[in-house]
Image 1 (cartoon, rainbow, N blue to C red):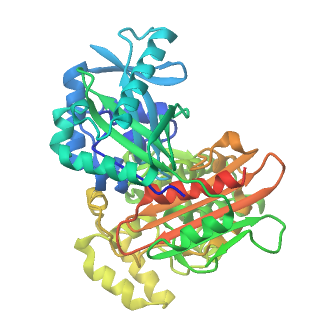
Image 2 (cartoon, rainbow, N blue to C red):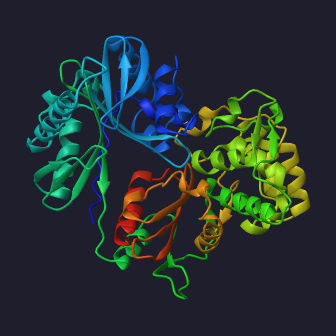
Image 3 (tube, one colour):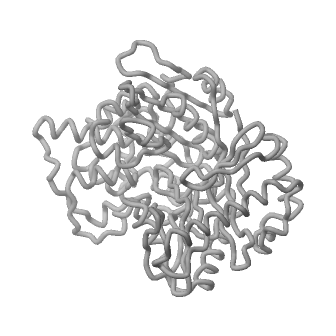
Length: 497
């Protein structure tokens, strides 16, 4: 298994970072970011920000405007987004988001001079980028002259040389490069690494480079051992539907914090109430100022009085992990049924979750903790938290864990049951998560994360007709290496194709 990972400085183009604010489609996400006058820290995944200071991202983003002028529009060129500016274009080669719509990877290369550029121009740009990547990884030691002064101001030439030497020591000599469809895949003697993001300046020097490990397992048992070796608390379940014994079981009955994956319980309760005739998908809910939570999602910025159908809210809750949409649904459905499905009494709404983590509400947090399992007392605390001030969203971009006992808790076993109940709904199939849709007949996904917490739960139907649930959770009092966890999870999915 290859565990090598090198994440250098920021990606000069931050196009899909706004997807936390609007993640319905990649196009909408990129357009919002490129047209906004000021980017926000909460648009980026915590793992991204632990590698790259937000100030650096903001400065480089301003540099884009300085070089290319104002953003005009977003076009498509050979099925890739093409950002059109006053003085040039940029081809976006990679744009990946986590389950909360936050930017995890991004890549772009200078585009053709005309927005109507032909296929040859785009291919030439990609070939130029591939040649540059190959030159970087073939040189031993790495040629630091290929990197811009801005890059080397963040990562010294000595540090860069050391990181590439470590990468080479773990993976062996560079052998080849090929485009996997979203960036480039590098093959070494002993492993593979994906270049998920690369940007260059006008002189052709690298301003941003980000790598993602490619994890490959020979067996599910090898995967189980790898997950078990992670520090902290880790659980993993691979279960085929209708089979009594799981294919992999690593503490799958243990309750861990799961972040936004709890929203599967809300979707399940919504479906149940609709089946019983108590609700309809077309029923409308009205947004009030009191309903606003924090991102991810967009509804926290919508005008008061806006109306949304339950189906619209469900789609936002699952595909974008929209927290305000989640709370609107929870309010409409009531908590009792959701809590029963999740197996957690007196659970918080997302707004209450954020309020309890607000340092300004420390007394509320103490009261919540003192209540323990006393359902009535805890409900009283949550009622106060519902109207308490929310923290600045930047609190969650500082790379530090915050009150991890304020969370939603469930086992992999329960999450797979929750997913099985709703996997046929289109809302669960809007965002495939880590899985590559083409590898399976169908993919249903929901995950969740905050600093120190991550869960990924996927139900797939293989092309051979097998239905499988793969649920993995990792909790730790310190920030997690989310990139590595996602790569390991992807390695499990590859074995199940």
